[in-house]
Image 1: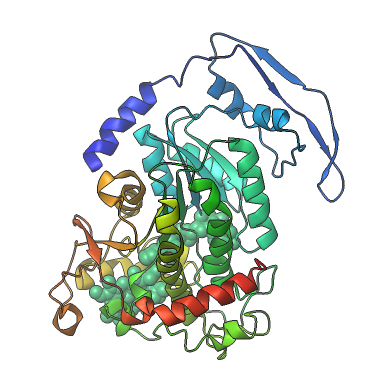
Image 2: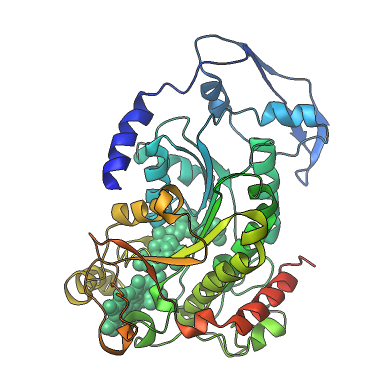
Amino acid sequence: VRFIFVAAAFLASSAAAFAPAASQVRTQRFTFSENNHVQQIATPYFTATSTTTSLADMLTQTELPEKIYLPEDKESAKVLGGLKIGTRKLTVITGASSGLGLNCAAALSKTGRHFVVMACRDVEKGKAVAKEMNMPENSYVVMKLELGSLQSVRDFVFNLKAFKSARPVNNLICNAAVYKPTDPEPAWTDDGFEQSMGINHFGHFLLVNLLVDDMSKSKDARVCIVGSITGNTNTVGGGLVYPQADLGNLQGFEKGAKQPIAMADGKPFFGAKAYKDSKVCNMMTVSELHRRYHESTGISFSSMYPGCIAETALFREKRPWFRKAFPWFMKYVTGGYVGMEEAGQRLAQVVDDPQCAKSDVYWSWNGGAQTVGRWAEDGKPRGAGGSGGEIFENAQSDAVRDRKTAMKMWELSVKACGMT
Ligand code: NDP
Ligand code: PMR
């Protein structure tokens, strides 16, 4: 796979987008009222006639405002969304401004097979890091998405639809996350969810649901929600290391999952556990999406564990000694360490490789130390995820596969996100 990426990177960088089919391109100018809603639509201000610059060039150079409110009429929507993606797949990835997401976005953009929408909470950071990673121009766009606000999720979907016009989204990767192991008190999202659950689960839950319909129009559409070994209690990392993920009977979700309720099980706030619980919800969402929509839409839903990417900003709250020792421990003791670049390629593989078209799979890689004893009773290999491994269909813990809890989680998440 790495081979393909490298080869495709060459192709992507040499392909000069495409010659413009139409010679005239217009975009619309909008003025915004105080609450950022469109007030007045001015006449087209950008008219270009060109046979030398590609259409894609012109339109990616046109800055997209954070919020675009389009008029109802389809003609204008078509013009603003006129960026030519060509035959490339339209791939949306959240949290593309750092770590796994950024490396995945870079890997995909360099294949020449994907036009990447980098959905970032900090657009300027997204643009800067995309440049640092040498992502080919015209292979991506950075759009605002703050997952800690359901309104921002809705705005993002609105803007994305305007931007891409009628063309369906091919791939959606829900990658963004926060981990708050040292916070003594919970922090809250705009909607009053505890942040780990709000950002990692609820924001993505709404996002996927808002895009399923659109994605059903594309062939070989894939949704991947990033999971983790630490949310699976059938692993050493998730089963032996305190605290374990446990949604209980979802008592906290039943009470609305909002301030002052911090945990899914309704118990007092525990940051490290909140992250692991959110990963369980991520993985359960995948199996419920599969059950509800795979047959009717053809979309493949999957989750994955990239390996322990011990040097990412996910561990920003951890003390300096931990951040130093953790990669070493993962490399030399557990064998579960994987570098950011390789992890990014793994995530990219899940949406790009024909081998990964199957739905309802939890993908993992066999690198590093094998887990042994009761963790491998069914004889299935359970690699710790370290570098150099082969992809395989991993088995999730019974708690993650528990249908009854997954259905309840789904229904309560629908309510919490105001989708009823
Ligand atoms: P990073 O912290 O490097 O990346 C997280 C990304 O999420 C960043 O781009 C961050 O934006 C973004 N993000 C955070 N909060 C929000 C928000 N409110 N709205 C929108 N975007 C937000 O961590 P990783 O790359 O390590 O994590 C990526 C995924 O991989 C996560 O789902 C994590 O659970 C999973 N994972 C990670 C493992 C690891 O060992 N690191 C192991 C297993 C799974 P910004 O750049 O602005 O901070
Ligand atoms: Mg863990 C094969 C053993 C293994 C693997 C694959 C991981 C992955 N971890 C393993 C074992 C251990 N860890 C052991 C034996 C210990 C006790 C020393 C240990 C400790 C530990 C800590 C304190 N591990 C951690 C932490 C974190 O703060 C990380 C975490 O839980 O974040 C939620 C973490 C992780 N260990 C992993 C992975 C992948 C993580 C990080 C992130 C994640 O799940 O997203």
